[in-house]
Image 1 (cartoon, rainbow, N blue to C red):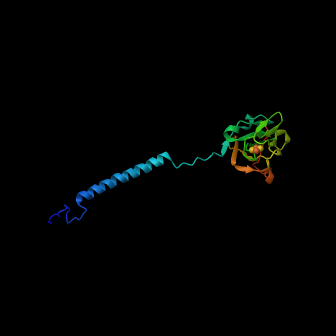
Image 2 (tube, rainbow, N blue to C red):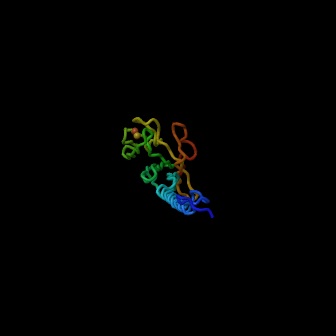
Image 3 (cartoon, rainbow, N blue to C red):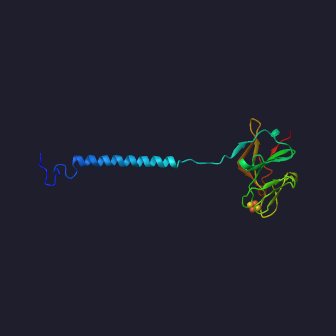
Length: 180
Ligand code: FES
């Protein structure tokens, strides 16, 4: 066995004596577990979750809505009016086509009026609910796809939009034909 040098290092093991190697390995383990812990904490604090808006809803049975009425039941939750004319249902978007404010339905004047810059859209009795006629809005309000679900409830799909200025209001799904 070789004698130790004056500085105490073992010539057979060089400067990496067994003790210093074990000490370094220990520190490595501590640091890597700290790193893993930090990563786990980061994942916990910032989970990779996508918060996607729900786009389709069942909104009850047709006979729950009075004929010739604009229902604002879904304005707060889903931002559309459910309109029942004498022979059909329409899901009309409550997003102003000017800059996106939420208009109000004024029943006495039968129109949708935007509080931000004064755009007005035709109401139920006009036969063209949502058509822009005053203010800066460049086009009518949009309609959402409306059908009947298998269980007979009205089904709204906001991912499918119908625009009057593109001639889409007469397409299937732009309104739901219904006579009680
Ligand atoms: S956002 Fe409606 S008129 Fe401007």
